[in-house]
Image 1 (cartoon, rainbow, N blue to C red):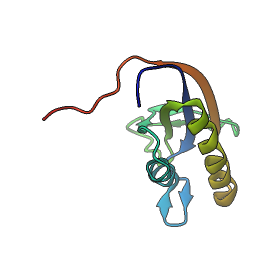
Image 2 (cartoon, rainbow, N blue to C red):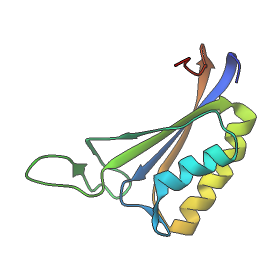
Image 3 (cartoon, rainbow, N blue to C red):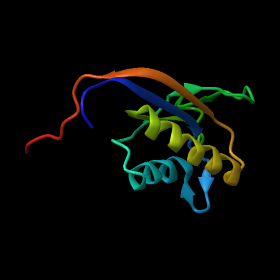
Amino acid sequence: MENNENAKLLRIFVGESDKAGHQPLYEAIVFEAKKQSLSGATVTRGIMGFGANSKVHTTKLFEISVDLPLIIEIVDAEDKIRGFIKTVEDLFEQTKSGGLITLEKAEIIRYRAGKK
C-alpha cells in the first residue's frame, strides 16, 4: 500500500472469550483480513472495559477475567475496508457475538516492511 490521504481505520471491538467454532473470534478476523489481502492487522488487549451489556471486565489481580476487551485495528484503502466490514458482520452473526465496529478517516504516512 502506498501513502494515502484517504485511507480508513477499521476498529473492531470483541471479547477475548468470543469464539468462531474452536478458534478465537479475533484470530478468525485477523486471518480473514490476511486472506483478503488487507495491509495488516493489530490486536490489542484492553486491561479494563465494558460494552453493550454493561458488565465490567478487568485484569485486577484478585479478579482474573477471562473475557478482556480486544481491539482489532486495520488500516487500508476505503474500498478494501468497506468490503471487509461485511465479512466481519457475517462473523458476528455466525458466532452470535456482541461487539462494536467503527470506521475513521486515516492518513497513511509510512507503510514499509523492515529490512532485517
